[in-house]
Length: 268
Image (cartoon, rainbow, N blue to C red; front, side):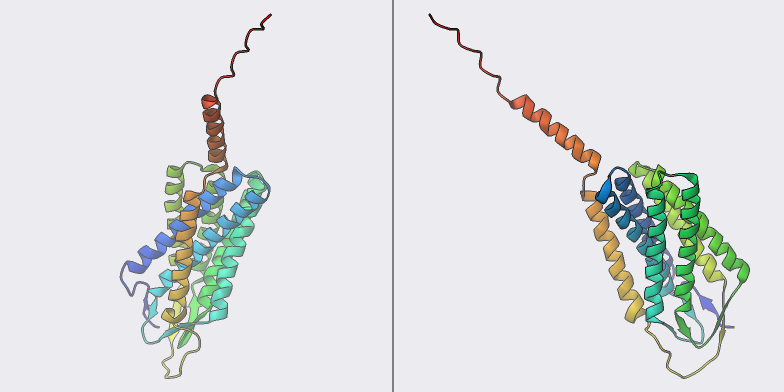
């Protein structure tokens, strides 16, 4: 059995992957807060941005962590179509959960169903990403640890959707994002503890792309998307702020309007 190293670059990849999960969670929560204050097309757009942020953050967390994954005795490559499919699954299932809860008014049944759907989708993303691994050997899993990782994913997803509906202040969002990042990272590393690799040494060239050829550039691109979108959300006023600005503007205009001149007395 090959020795699995989950941190070939030391603490760099675990810390960076956790940061990506937290950034995605924070951005998703802020976008959901904006969505709940909006209506119509604006609400739809904010929920879409929230789904893409959380899904992208989870996917980026997984593959940044995988940059530090190695197996003694074999190289590792990734099947590109399966890797891209895992990204699509992450964004799609998170979107389904966010939209279900965002348009339901926070009903408990919708929250539980959304959390279950999203959690199973996040777990599917993780194991699709693992299925994309190409190495010299066989990969198997400990079923109990797999089940535990799925349970963590469902609980984390349900908590994330609850937080999206109930947490409004920036400080509370920051704390919730740190907790959500820890939960998602726990799910990932629990799933990785379930992995067993039996190496079969070979000189054959592995199919697929290396981490530096494909995973690293894609992770950098998606990480940049998260940072740029975070800046956009931070600089865009909320509906409440726009209403306050408009009210302040009307008050200022009323204050500087000259008083109407008194009518001149009639002359005989």
